Amino acid sequence: MTGDLDRPNIDQVDSPELDLVVEAYKSGVDKTLILENLRLTPQQRVEKLIALHQFDDELRNAIAGRSRGG
Amino acid sequence: MTDFKALFTCFADSGIDVIVIGGVAARAHGSARFTEDLDVVYLRTPENIRRMVRALDSHSPYLRGAPPGLPFRWDERTITRGLNFTLITDLGAIDLIGEVTGGGHYEDLIEHTVSAELFGHSYRCLDLDWLIRVKRAAGRPKDLEALAELEVIRDAKMPHPPTAGEFAK
Image (cartoon, rainbow over all chains, first blue to last red):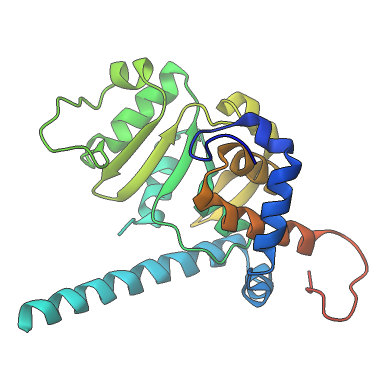
């Protein structure tokens, strides 16, 4: 692949070089999570994201509280 | 924390025309990836910009990552003279995009959207093929894993007879 990946490049839409990189990354995709999500409605999928955000928030608060408390 | 439900409701209640793209659109298509912000392409008509300014005005929009105290004015003039805005609000992080690389403007994208029912309202989400297209055009290293996942989702949704070990649709 040529060029700076941090710069948008419309030529990359049909880039065979990019195809190769994406194919390599596909092996790392957890297909079981996708399968699980595809059984849900779009709203349920977004609600899972919201739940993750709430968990993330609680986790950060817990760590911050622990740091303050020693 | 970004309050996605509140942001979606804010857009719907104010009648703002947007197309959901980015991580939340990917999520609606089945992605399992985490995202921090809501990315939308907005219609750049004076009326839509007016609605957007009114709707977000009470949520303290400010340029995300910018030092405090900059003379940023959230008004119609600012939106009209600018294009893409990366904002933090008291509802969370939102990217208001006037033109997206590889996709264009709202009018270019609207025919490549699907309807999604979220929180009692119907929203336009960029369809999977075009979500992949704009991710490819962005071509950032951080997008490569997300791009791979989107292509796996597209493969999983393809209508063909399932074989042993393949995804159920």
